[in-house]
Length: 444
Image (cartoon, rainbow, N blue to C red; front, side):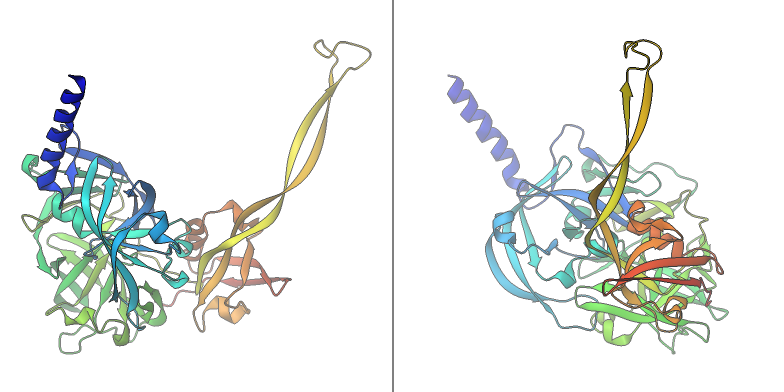
């Protein structure tokens, strides 16, 4: 009898799941779930379980299918099957990259599960974004989550809420702005306004939570979207198809209905890196993490709506890298650490548990593995380059403190500090330890 009841229960569960195998569903009675994320370099990193393996993914509104990268034995590790070889491309001037398309994978995000998920697996160290973020990153996911749920993004408290659309209800919000979304190739676009060279220009922008910058604009003289005379050339980021370079500058303002941000950073990527991105009719660029993190957001794909409410990040000043250095995690190195041992002994023949015990402090050293950070990009003509630093240098200390005491993000934030700040770096190059110093320089 118990066996019959068990089989009936199993059949009941599977029959309930069967119609929903092609979408995410919440496995609890509330129909919603809250998932914490790490905000690293303005990117949301969420835990995702793929075929029973716990991984870390970037939550990216700019991708249509999950992508997993840097798994040399991905087929064995994740037990993926039903694969076919295809070619995909993203930002960057390089060629399309080879990928394995796999079907029928099980994805789990908190209490949300999908039993029949397609994914793309790409290979190669150049496609591993983890070193540049200083944290393990295994993939990117976007559309499948946003299409199946109303997604609340609380940037100020670092969590998202996934809500079944049938139970979601809008509440009155006097301090909110609700914007209409447009979709092209399953990606969300929003209309905004940017002020450049004393001219207000309407723009259509991809909402790109997988980008860490503020605004990317595609230069167009006919629309007045130009960098003007005040800009500098820089490394802008790393896409699936290679590194992206271009100009960096400032806009006078950027507006989303009544919300206005002053002097936001603007990047103008080289045309060779955005050939395919420009094929979307009317697209003028992207709005990314350094703008999005200033709001708490409701993404409602089914009703083509995005709701914004200012959060505590709204008034943060827009800064940029004034050193010219881009660092990445570069394996590990041995570091000597000291620990202090306290040793007691009997003083004047008294019992060690009584008064009169003397303690000796003994320092003992040990070698431990700590993260190493190397220079992977160096802006030409930057303060760091003028000082003599080079690509490949492993940074050992910054202003007298060992770099292993900091996260990669903490070090990079020092390079975004005020113009004139003194920076002293001790680096290792070809087994030599060298010291360089420079001051951060404002170019805008």
